[in-house]
Image (cartoon, rainbow, N blue to C red; front, side, top):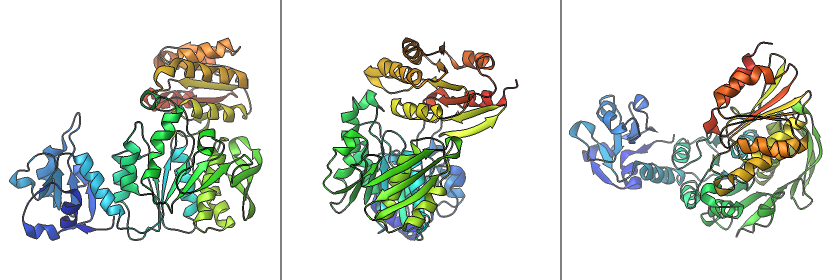
Length: 454
């Protein structure tokens, strides 16, 4: 983190300062909400959680040399210097917005219903071929995660790639005020967070709040194969990417290599070049094209872009391919919505052996929940997936949709029943996709599959 003074923090955050004026010249070299890391030079931000109240650790942080605390109540003598605020969350956002303003570098803001983290990692891999690249860690993409991301910006960074996730109206507006992206990248407008956003038009409207906080000289990089995004006309220059003829950065000669990834030719106004994506799943094409579009905008050569795409690494449980006990297991259980499930099923259909999908509940879909689950089951059956296993209260509709479309489907109301039955359902040589919303904790299903003995 690029250091600043406590006085800078007081002015950026506002609130009420408690402490000696001399302390305002203290250097802040880190910002944390974890008291265990609040040593010399740290600004400790106290949050009141459901189980732990950070305010209880303020005095200990000061004793260990923390430069100051941010808190929501008046600090005691042993907890000073401190800045008292109405909301620690808003305070950290204000500080992050101020810190972002210290950097005159390209900032890429990434949003969409599907593929944000994959796109973020792909763009980072490409830009890292030329620039010192700062990026969101893991999926710290909400109103708490984005400030921590921005506060890691340091003097050496030449470009920043920030993932921006929302679930309701107004959130993107607040995130954009912190991030101030110079380039906006949109992946897909899909059926996610419909409980709050209503429909896809609502999803687009909520995510398009990003454009309101961008300068007219900015750039929108949009998925041209998504009808809503293809029709989106922000008040700035735009570049479309995809496989359609309408796209400025386009994929041709695509070859699905199964577990070995994808080869393709990337075409743009200045020419065309070959690239190889070292990751499973047809959806990776869009991440690569978005990265190519951003790379071209920021002056990278075709060779640098191709090298960056080849350097991509899968993140966590996002289409991670595992081999164990004669099985090929695709662990994709970080999150799920109808769009990402269909994309994962498309990729499964290209694998060898008997194809099996283990699908769990997709959350926050609102009134359309039953139909959207049923449609996923019908889609799996139409693809010819040989065995469709559904688990969870909502996933009953997946099994019903699959059976109504002629698929071989099994249903389990809870995960424990599924785990017990798995050895009888799975055969050696199967390719198995495991996908569900994060709240279903389907990593336990992946663990069971990779440890089964036949």
